[in-house]
Image 1: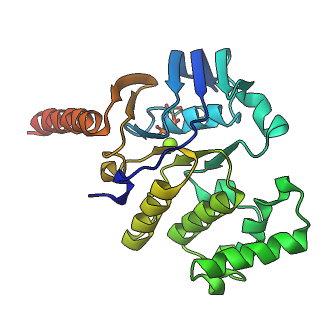
Image 2 (image 1 turned 90 degrees about the horizontal axis):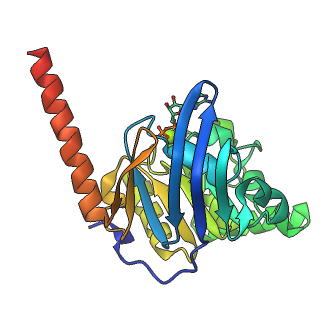
Length: 248
Ligand SMILES: Nc1ncnc2c1ncn2[C@@H]1O[C@H](COP(=O)(O)OP(=O)(O)O)[C@@H](O)[C@H]1O
Ligand SMILES: [Mg+2]
């Protein structure tokens, strides 16, 4: 069983999406989407293009809907990064969208800047954090010399050290090796914050009390992880079977 099964008590961030329409370029991603996201652990599943990353981008204010409202703890999502920089943290699907600095310690130190900590102190704290995880040798490694999975690991560490109140993790397991996935699963289980995680690796969210299946921008199912993951897998199996027949 995945380590995320044992979830401690958390303070949910109270996220409310009301009648949202989101367009990106010529594409209408959401039309009349309404969701209350108040559970401490929420899984987000669905095919490529279903809208998982778009939902995260709206929740952290990167994409602003044309209609409706997205509220995080009573604030409009688009104002959160200005008004409460420590409230929402996002781990991007593509590490290169998240990473700014050339070395691991510098990147991790960035997460401490909203607290007003002097840079030299932030870098020292980042080094100490890496050492506490048995990763002291990573401090001065050039980001450019890391593999995709290692960069994804750095993105998670950067989010951990920044410690926002709400963690949005967009396919965080995608490039991680087996030990990396297990460790991330443990970190998520232990996190004191609300966590929303999208993934195609269903074993990581199956134990969650709530999983949402997005299908072409709509909520296809919303409920206990076991049930929603089973429904999605059955749908995938049926679609593959139909496609195999059409090839025959
Ligand atoms: N920058 C963009 N401009 C226009 N359409 C986009 C853009 N990014 C994603 N989309 C479209 O939005 C839809 C949802 O994409 P996305 O949120 O990335 O899905 P997922 O994360 O579930 O794979 C897809 O149809 C995709 O083609
Ligand atoms: Mg995505």
